[in-house]
Length: 433
Ligand SMILES: [Zn+2]
Image (cartoon, rainbow, N blue to C red; front, side):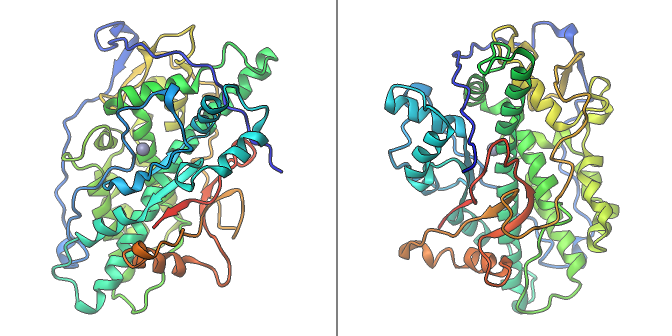
C-alpha cells in the first residue's frame, strides 16, 4: 500500500493586504503591454480546420460560498452537472478537511484518509476530474464551415481530443501545486526535524486566499502554462487515429493547435485565465517556426513552451521557472511572512528577492516529458467513465476518442505526464459522462 501523506491542517483565515500600494520599492515591473489578439494568418490555406474557436468555458468550478468549516464531501454535488465547467481538481487537503469536519479529529494516517476518500461519491474524490458534457457541447459549437463533409467527424474528434488534453493538463497544474506544498513541507521538516514545522507554509491558507481572490490568482496562470507545456504542445502526447486519412495532416494538426491557443489567451476570456497572455509569447509559440516544428514532428518542439515563456527576461528570476514563482507564493503563507509579496496573475510584478527553496536546484518535473509507459502509476492515466444511460449518447465522441487512445486490451489510457507518485499518488482521471 502506498503511503499517502497527511495534509498540513494549519490554517489562518487569510487577511487581504492591498499590496499594489505598499512596498512598491520591493518590486520590479516587467513590460506591461496591453492584451493583444494577434492577427491570424495562414489559416486560409486550410479552410474550415483553421476556423476560430468559440470562447472557452472555465476549466474550474467556482464556488463563491466556499468555507473551510463547512466542507462536507459526503454530500453529492455533481459539479459537472452545473454546466459550463470543463473539469476540476479535488485537492487532497480538502478531502482531509472534510474528514476532520465529519469526525471531529484529524485522520491518524494517510491510509485512513485514503480509505475515507475511496468511500466518497466519485465526483468528490481526490484527483483530476473531467466534465465530458461541457467538452462535448463546446465542440458541438465549433464552426465547421468550409470543412470537407467527409472530414467533419475527424475534425470534431480531434478538437475533442485536444480539449480533453488541455483540461487534464490544466488540472494537473493544480495537482503539481499541491505536490509542491508537500515538497516544501518535507524540506522544512528536514531542516527543523519537526513533522509539523512552524516554518512550513499553510497550503490551506494559500488555497483559501486563492478562493477569495480568484481573479488575480497566479496558480491559474501556472495551470494554463501546464496545459500548454505538458498538454497541447507535449511532444510525446499520443495522437488519435482517424477512420479516414486527412490531407496534409501534420500541417492541419499545427493549425488546430494554434486555434486552441488563440482561444486560450483571447482578451474576451475572463481573468485570470487570459493573463497567460502576459507570461507566454503566443506570437512566438504559434508562429510559423514552432508550427513547422510541430508539423515536422521534430523533438525540438518540446522546448517551444519554455522558450516562449517570459519569466527569463526578469532579473530576479533569471534561472527561475514557472514553478519557482508558484513556490514563492506558497512560501508567503506562513505567519512570519506577509501576503504583500504574492505574485499575481497580472501585471507581472516580481519581488526583487524571491523566496524559493528549489530556486538553486533548478530542477522541476515540468521540464521533462516521460515517454509513455502503459499503465504506469508514475504517469497520468485516464479512468473508465462511469456509465450513465441518459448521458451515454451525448458523450459518444469522448468515448470514441478514449477508445482510440487505448493500447489494445489495456486500460486505462496512459498519458506522457508525470505523476509524483512518491509524494502524492494520483488515481486515474475521473471521467464524468
Ligand atoms: Zn484552474
